[in-house]
Image 1: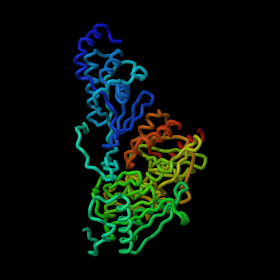
Image 2: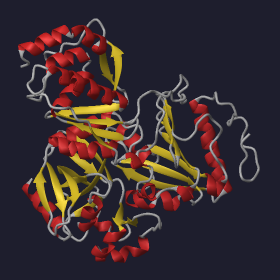
Image 3: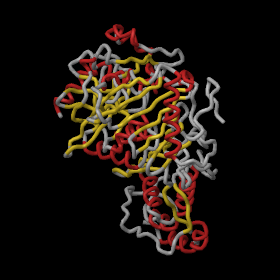
Length: 167
Length: 356
């Protein structure tokens, strides 16, 4: 549990956090994933890379793909021992940013109805610096760089450039 | 307007030069081009196969694609079916001078719809018509087809076709016997082929060195043969003296690191077409002498099999991931560390199968 001083710090900084963390996330439609035994396996079918997440990183992933806003993630994960709040806020934010840059999740403004987070199990017993293990060894075998968006006639649309990409 | 090699104009009615044509019209235009390609060469050559109980007819325009498409699936040859489950029309531009009809398609494009799905990959174009169960398969330049596509021809078509029928492709070698076998998975270079080829001179049978089909029947999983080709790292040739008898069957591409073998010609009786899957095994080369097995987690096995399968299959999606996950979760998973003494590999696998 985070100590009372940290809780006060969290409350005092709530305005700033709200400004930074009022977004929630959803899965990129070209990504498939699975969480087994506290580990996440993620495959990005857009760019031919795959990823492995463990412990806190897997927890953040699980929360993100279930639409939990960043602010709520911070609240949940700061209840675990391991880091002071500033560090937790910073590391969660950086990690989510990394997931976005890899094109794994897409950010959206939070809706009024926030998904219930109380039933989402967290696998890590304490907060650890989240690490994104990325594997690119399949890229040479990757079938194509497909354009999946098609028009109403079923013909391909020109791919729109997005800000996402590889790190 | 597109001109063929002979300088003749293609059929104007079915090959419009505007891009607003419908998919069925484009498909029909492709089939007309196939027929024109056949007319330009030695005619249509038909090959009949059976895959997991479903009949397949390949119709090749001329013989240029025969050595590219047919050797790896020779073991699937079957009597001609009156009504094939799937018919594939194949031609190449190099030998026939006939290209695809005009469209907005360019390389790396997908065509997607309820009735059809297609991809214009770096080396081929295919368009699967799910309503008529027909496929257009076009190769711009047969000389540029990489070795791995000769080892595993029509992989995209088989992936879509099998998925439609309720089967799943997996990037795995497979060895075993009638009572059961293992899927041996792992990325390229992890030793799948080496382990599978090492079983040729053992009591075990060879099913695949690269891709298999699997399916679930009443909670039992079965593996089915797909290709009877194998790739052997050139550095390892001296460790497989029994394969020197197959040297005439090797297709060499100097730039490739591996030899390509078509095992149906010399090891026909060692190819097994189906077995129950007893375990999922992840292969890994080691510098040691001995080979041994150790249990691994479901996550480790899924991490090995799912990405290497899905990233090699066009339009793989969550259905493929789910199928692979269910298989891996239902079977015990092991890691096979293969040592330099290749004769130990089949022994280790055989001992595992006897325990399961």
